[in-house]
Length: 230
Length: 210
Image 1 (tube, rainbow over the protein chains, first blue to last red):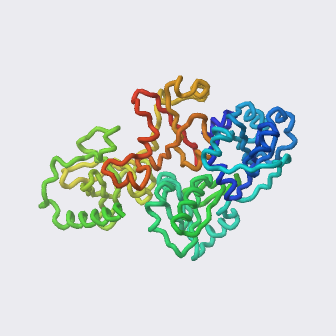
Image 2: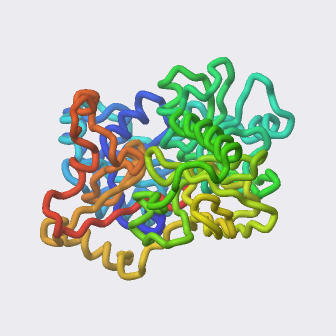
Image 3: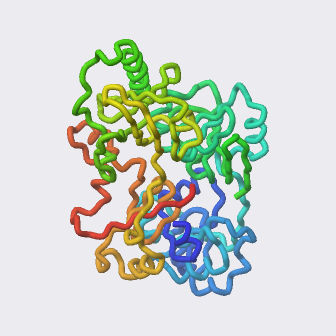
């Protein structure tokens, strides 16, 4: 996947993820590539209307932050539009799989009227994200009310863990959640934040309170670590 | 939970072995290789392959699970050679290990313990980016393949390769719903994602470092 993505090949996303973006209020850019007329009749809430034929000349209208998730949609999977936007360096660009039909088939609502025509993108932390500073403070000094949970595989954890952390691989969280204290805040981490987030979601569902570290972390044998912002 | 029970069992077994020593029952014909390990390892006379249950420091024994109800209890000393781990305490519970021993099967003494290295995929089983691009341009029907995204479903939804089917590796053998879970042979995620035609090319990809 990382190689495929890095080399700029087509990435498609599912309506379920777009729904998540909208309901969880995660910052993203949603572009309706159809003609303005079609868009007015029914567009996905939050979409910006930017017809495909005007796309190539609209580079300036896109956000400065190249890591912004950008989702493009039309009636089909428009791989040319993907190439254009991806070519500008937006590494998290995707095309909605199945187009607008897949969105409505998945129960997604449409909005009528005039969609926005200017893109506004304000990056914000994902829900449940802990700041690197706060994570470090807990890792250094410890906190009786918090528990650091390492959700990497046992193989990775055996090469070094943060002092005082507990290891349960992300895939085993649901079946082993009873091993965790309910009265503590569970702070999950992995190596990049991906598994940590899914573990955080699993724990939230199981009734635990917690947050996750959404950053790159390397830990050596002595428990010394280095955190880098993504 | 199960593993914990076993470690208790193993500690108790170790104790019994220490107490009754060689007057215990014969260990002959006891399996030496855990079922999944036979995919790559044949049974050898003086090597035990299984998962680590526990290390009982007090009695200096390594307890290795080789069958559902079979735990080998192997003594060790300071001369134990470790391969793939710095110290014995760093080997995680349930980790796949191989222990070479000397002496009688009844009183095995560990010579070396090797920790299973990360699996390597043979070169001929890898698909290059170039081939993948070609296969995607063709589509799965013409190309006669199934492309599987083995990351969690949420990651799949956020963005995946065209034509990919989601099959979270952690849920490979998990029943698809609660109703199926009640059945004797439940329908699992792998049954719904993998092709019925066994001669079809199945290509897996994941997120690399996560």
